[in-house]
Length: 167
Image 1 (tube, rainbow, N blue to C red):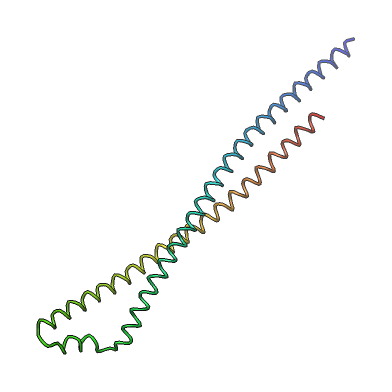
Image 2 (cartoon, rainbow, N blue to C red):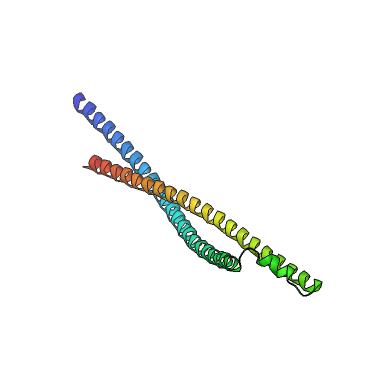
């Protein structure tokens, strides 16, 4: 009879141990599921941000192409005019007033050329920064995807462990 009581106590102890282990697994699974949901949400946010950046990059590339075409046309026009066209334009004026007008006009053209070059350089820098940030986001997304997959695998392993205990 004493033997039966001891055996019953051991069985109850094992039962408590199994129940404690099951509860521990259940809490772990709940925490893992919450972390997984959180990481999935962050992954979606990062993917959305990446899409926005790629769209921005496309817009910037188009603007850059437009500035490049504008500057190319200007360079082509300068080439066609030849080297001495500015001096000839000023020196062949009919009067001093006409020479001043032409000089003012040439100053406006030169300022426009500087502005186009400046805009092009700024657009190029912005595009480069966006592309670098896009590359960083892609790396972040890859890391998050790997983390999500690892969490899924861990959660699946805990579920299997729970089902093994329950067998």
